[in-house]
Length: 588
Image 1: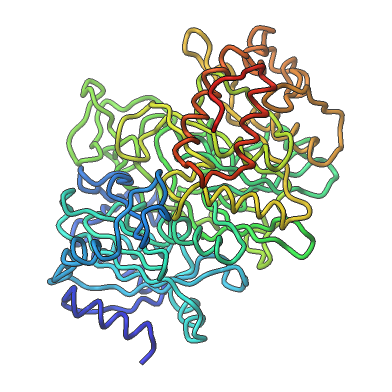
Image 2: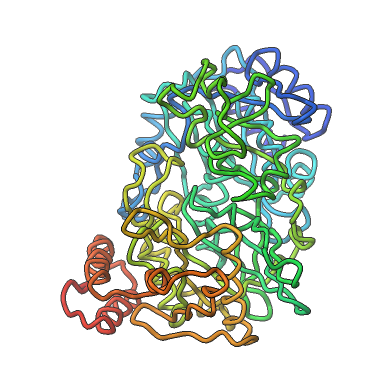
């Protein structure tokens, strides 16, 4: 008996399912699961003429987003989890959480889901096995990973694999936990059916566990998009970008260039997760470990992301969106007028006078990457693609310019370590609150973030040709609360400047400021957009008075890491303070 079979038998002895089903990832298996879920009401069939192969799922109203306060790192020592993670010792997990699995699958089927994170033939890909009692999870895992037979073939070669146990339990928030054990690469999830908590290949494996694996084996697992950026008559460059959830990451990865006819194009490699390895040429090479998109629906439309709209028109599972009378999907921000009547995300009648959104603000679509009309032909290259630039970005209404280039790798790591963003509906809690989200990894780093930054610094030394690092901010607002930058497709103007900064081609220069290198208005097409001088200034200015409390906030955030904070980040903080003419609030 293989180690996987032994492990599955052991889990079954505790969870007591009525039957065990080993998933092969076939079309027939998927169709059978969908049929069973339609019969049970787990899925609702949408209009098959408008949305062939598409279905709607409604989750429990208490189970609609990642539950960060119930997500734990179970290292032996609390300091190994660090101050930004919730910590639970492995012994407490066994006493407190493991009993919740006792008989949890009684009356249900336990599905065994072997899967590959990454292209099937890539040496950088990894294998996982999830057991779950949710057919909805199985169907989503089939879209999001290379599931079934290809994974079994790698497992039969005795490859290292990551075990994950998931049960929806009774969906009680009081008995909901998502646990990660870095030492033995194991994941436990109970009491939730929401994607970020239940699709264990996604955030749990591909970020929290993989970040630890990367630290131990000299590679990186990052919450980043990967895009291919091509200039006229030139070879492409590849850009990775870290943005907190619901901050435009998918829109940027699938951007439709307004200059496509001129030869400036964007193609998608990945829109959420990126694994980086140092290649033989000294560059960082990236793979997308996923095979599908788990995107935020509200705000997605033919202006913000026409390619996503095309992607989700077939073979897609929608979760917690609204539905029209003719069984089409609807959400706030979708194209067209608001219907007079809808069925909301909880299955209730809805009208525009309801006083509440028809679709949940964190409603989602799960769609195959292969349906993306701008998918790069290199998205499954076994060796990955070489990264020339890394972008850090979040929602900032003030202070942070539209774009600036860091002064080097160490400064770029500091920029990523101190980035902040206004919170969104992708996680439970208040929306619109400014919080630090280093490298967009605050909810996803599987170990002490100070050590994580140290790993970034080490990777910059390992790579003889590391990428340039930039910060972007599409979300600056004026005194009336209006966005200053048009965003969406016009973000191509910023990518064009980044391309020229990376390659040395073109005429784009940069103005040195205390925070980094900033373009002139002409370099981002301010004249073509007919942006008034005051708006250009608002986009690109570095206001010393606004940055003084920003730097003080950096100091307070970094201070919580104490002696574990890398000395290089202390020095970068001092250098930034000096460039701004400040002397107070330095990290000690």
